[in-house]
Length: 130
Image (cartoon, rainbow, N blue to C red; front, side):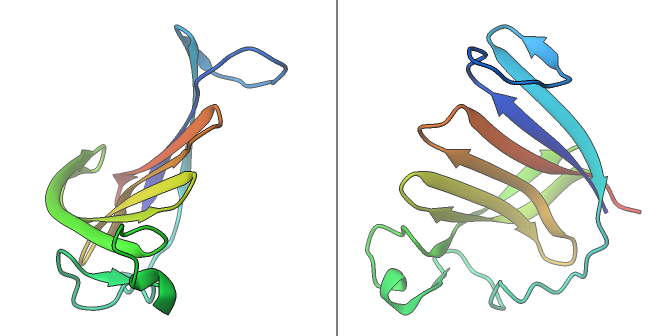
């Protein structure tokens, strides 16, 4: 599989060096990477279903769904490789939000990472399957 990664810098003040395309006040860096993967994901319990939660025992007991993996919904997600019916799985902490779109039989189709309080965001999307 080939993934296309995006790193978005929200504030261009200060010292940094990037080869990039400037879009207003934002900087977007793109790279492409290949990865051989298995369609088996030991981090995900099977079968997945909406409302499922897993992680550390004490974290699973929290009512706010933070500090544990939580299957929020099944939805279509469109990436460069196509449109896939995926489980949206969130892992939220203070200050991080990680959302993965997982399609059984395909794997992770998209990942978004946000670290609140910093200037960068990260997105990885499935570009194509070979």
